Length: 141
Image 1: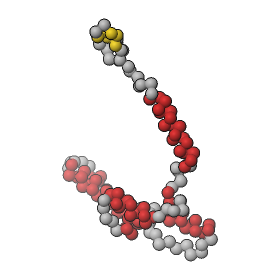
Image 2: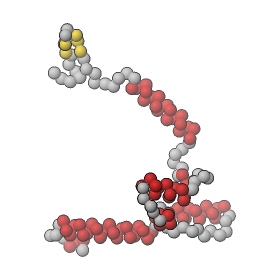
Image 3: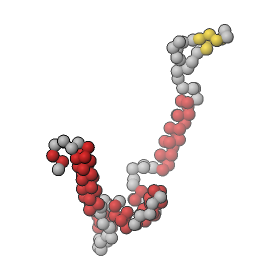
């Protein structure tokens, strides 16, 4: 018997199997889409980063990140790790556009961490390839 296609007789009753979703699913999905559209109209565009909101607090974000992971981090190192140089440039440009003369920021970018991470990853991959494939080409040395 083919599933979902064939009609069967059981106790003299015709039984068919459905291959489609129940009737209430489509209206339910339409209602969910309508609610989502209404909510998007109320809240606006989500493409604006949270750092652009007036009430955004960098220290609170970093603290919450550490708590979500269940780890204790040095707040300054974590702040530095999440700060890209483009963010610092944007902040400096924003200060200039607002007319703030002293445009010194107490922020450091994560360029040094990126370089260290690249070195660590490449060294680890080279060591793994040397151990896993000892007769491989010496291109990785």
